[in-house]
Image (tube, rainbow, N blue to C red; front, side, top):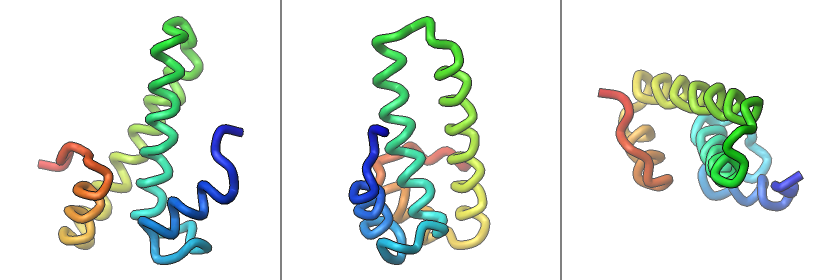
Length: 92
């Protein structure tokens, strides 16, 4: 797989509450962002890989849903994760 256990633990340690807290919203959004970047690079090389394109669209939807949840629950945490991951503000 393209992402090792150590790399995932580093993502969760940096953006989540700890390396073992894999369920935090910020950690999940950071992991989804990493996966989205990887799939986007793959699709730039393989334009006709439609199954990857579908999975990318689903992953973007999941990330958007988590960000919408975080926006409703705690706007400061939402703004912090948007700034840390350099994402556009998708919730208006």
